[in-house]
Length: 69
Image (tube, rainbow, N blue to C red):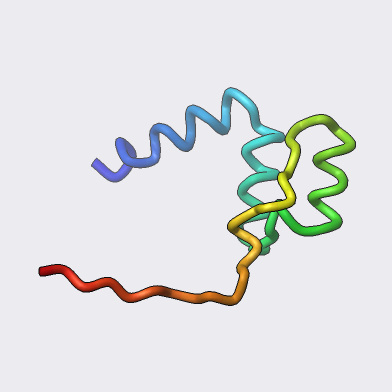
């Protein structure tokens, strides 16, 4: 049963091991792809482009509260 939950991750690991391990390492190290030096390296590789209005950069507004009636 536990192996069934790991099956998608194992399939991705066998399809593209370098990309999977790179993403896994960046997640473990908590690297943000939208910050330098990763941002500039990814743009040079042509992998992705970042807009100047990136919402994940943390504009300091923090969590917002909502009321549900």
